[in-house]
Figure 1 (cartoon, one colour):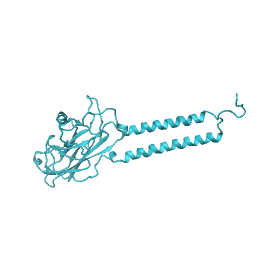
Figure 2 (figure 1 turned 135 degrees about the vertical axis):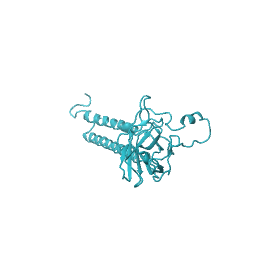
Figure 3 (figure 1 turned 90 degrees about the vertical axis):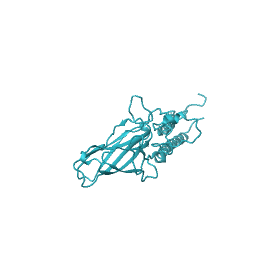
Figure 4 (figure 1 turned 180 degrees about the horizontal axis):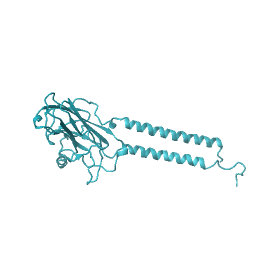
Length: 279
């Protein structure tokens, strides 16, 4: 059976339409994943958080991402909060210290530090981790942008991993005469989803949260598990699904369509008209 030019052009148009439809489907699906609820690190009920702070790692006050924690303290105290961060998120911690007026004798230097679930101090990519406040300053603002949290890391590396992250705020340089002066503190932690470009193979068996070893030892208990401090209420990410799966499958479909389209262009138009059917 001879293939006519009209049929060949019709097949090419159909393949072209399928290829464009595949591209549109892949783009819309990617946008849907990016705009879905899982792409936002901040909870829907952003607002006021706890009104006190802990004084040690063990007594750190739980803080959800997007909430603003406040506390009244004295200059020289160590203040602690803990918040959860999952794989693919890049946390940013911001703190504002409101200083007393007309009561300080000299400048002061304030510092914010962030520790992971293993209590390893995490370096800030950028921000104002340490700042000096003049004697007449009304407040001082600090910030720390961490590296993207990884789902898995080598034992020797200090990469940020899913789990609890501790915020510690204190003054590191203050005259003895100003110790104990009342200060007000505001702290907030938010995250930005970095997407599949920062995903790595592998995942932790358990996120790094307080009491994870105790919880694992008592798995036989039938009582429902209550989220601990520094753990999201809706649970942690499963660790296997990323948007790279979407792009991999979509790329395979588009490659198959392109191969069929290329074959239709190079196979020719069948038997030439001047050649008899029996030859």
